[in-house]
Image 1 (cartoon, rainbow, N blue to C red):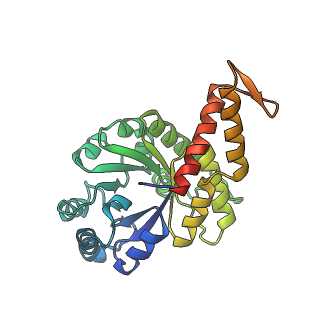
Image 2 (cartoon, rainbow, N blue to C red):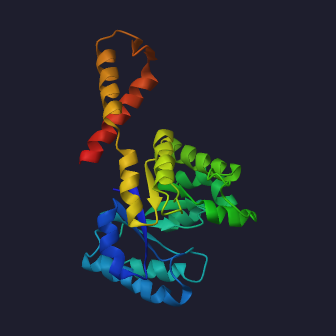
Image 3 (cartoon, rainbow, N blue to C red):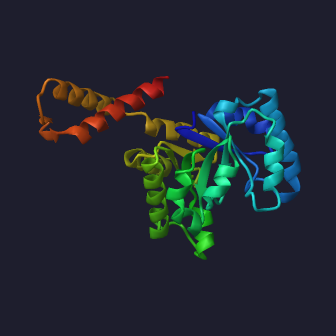
Length: 272
């Protein structure tokens, strides 16, 4: 299970691993940005130990390694090879061959550079790629920009482009698309609105950076009672019809029926 709420947790804070795993559907133990260079060996050891000891369930854990072409990535791979982890998050993903090198691990490819966003389709088509995620802040820095959002909180066009590109590439390849993080921890209304938009767009999960954000994300992914009632009404109307029909004055055809089935599937998943 990858989502719907994926919570980042610094690999250098093993005291937080259990709480993070309990708060979200999956925990991303981070060996990259959340860990200072001097702390990386200890973080690597802490993550490997937690996985080997079963302190964190491997099927609910993703490990963000460092880039393989950098100073720390190869050591991350070596430390994790004998652990039961099955999925790694590859930061600054841009080269499909690098994703393939990480087999037999499943790879969630993080498109957070100009090259990575433009390579989203090729990355998603690698056999061991299970999904794509995007990152606004690293992308903005890579472009030489100064901000990812407008003053009203809405994304600037370069981020919108990356978000949509990753979504289309992942879904075209049958992979999960993971929406990026919302940095304003206190702004739960903004997080809820952004997650609701992500659900409407088709993102299968959303990443977060604080345990308090996980329930907000889960709530947004769970269909409302009104949505479930509408979906059941649509499915019943189609079953009783021999062709295109209407529900509440609106035409219902095959795409609308698929929307209804997706809502019911999400409702069942929320109860699981």
